[in-house]
Image (cartoon, protein in one colour):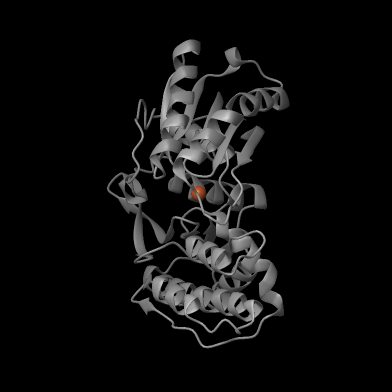
Length: 332
Ligand code: FE2
């Protein structure tokens, strides 16, 4: 089966084509034929939803054509369409929905809605060959510790811990914007951090939950003489340490033998190093997907669509900005 996937939950618009057997989506025969994505660049004013929508509309035709060209396929070769139906920003989600729905109508193929958070974790499981991990999902909008658990005849993700306010990535993005770094986001913080030294910042772990807004307020109130590199280094070290404490508690509670780091901020090498170390201390296998499959991309939507295809799970779904990952059934 060949599946066309669209990603459009926030800053990225992407189209991907994958091929595989829906009865065995985790088989080594599953192939990503193309994965073409355009990301709206970080700006000092942040993301304005209407401008994101304009970006997605502008790049739609080029992305779709490039995805088919790079896969060597025609639209009539597609058997099913998958798109990210949530969680995300309304403007973006509706562009992904219309892209999928239009293709489905014209080509007479079914379309499925894929949960964006679920897709981040499922491609991690696929590429890192993990069956039942503790997933550490870190991105701009989300920070969650997820445990795949049996529920009767199926499985679901339980949220063991999460941020009580903003996501880890959003916190780092806001530090980058506050310091007017280049780029003004988490990548700017990552680049500046190695030259910094540790300064005292508040540490907030509540059970297996974390909170970043107090940390952000303190950073914004630091004297203007504070070296930006020190702020970047300390913001990362303190925020990542908080997360690692929550990961450690979750591992002990869940007795998981695998820990999987996923989401856009899983690209951060320092965070990878710290979570890997927690895993090592608890004799737990660590996994992180490749750079391409950590950030938002259409490939993860198409691959999760392949997993859902056998049961036509998520058929005809409309966008849902607030859907949570523990609402999804894991039938594969
Ligand atoms: Fe994401």
